[in-house]
Length: 277
Figure 1: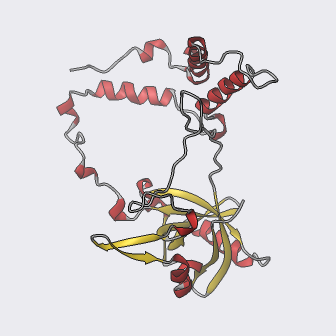
Figure 2 (figure 1 turned 90 degrees about the horizontal axis):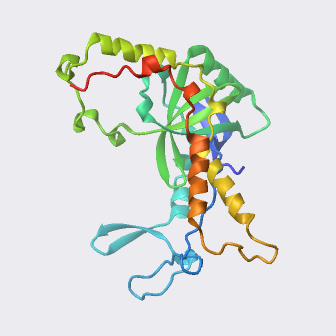
């Protein structure tokens, strides 16, 4: 796994050489866009709006339009060389209680791993954060964008969790949300109790490993079944997709994603619905 960032984390006079690795490991099936008539790949071209000709990747740059059709070319390499401290350092500006941060702000986590053999400072920061129940607030430049982030401990690792800036969060006041008292919606205490009881009945200990991407698994199985129809010469026994194929796929999805009756709350609880009035 290639790091997406290399540099130093600093707090006070302590500097820690580190690398940042994505926490997420994608396992999505790679699907291509095809022409349904002959199954040819669909390609995208980068076309010059003036000449109508395709432009090679090495000739494409980023630019800022400061006036109509007038651009400043953003030379990322030159900018990085001019301000290396911005790209290579994560300075913790303050420490805060994690519980004070609204979950709305959380965006994407990364593992922070030691960038040198001397791991003392890394372990020191990790353990100090654990003991104080604090997280570090900092900014980081990843590629050509600045992010607000939190540095927090997680078991044996330090995490860097990108968070949204306050101005990027849509305010609830902008939405048409129900804000009146419960009486305005004719919700009784009995109905609240029924809903609470149902939630308690369905409450389990959090076990993330029991959840799977059922859609991906079902799609993968369906694709394997289609591949099995191809003979050694590479010619499909069933050239066109038949209705049965679709039915099999839907049935497979239902089997993998559907809930059985034994997983649902007992009928006597589930059948009690709040009044529609």
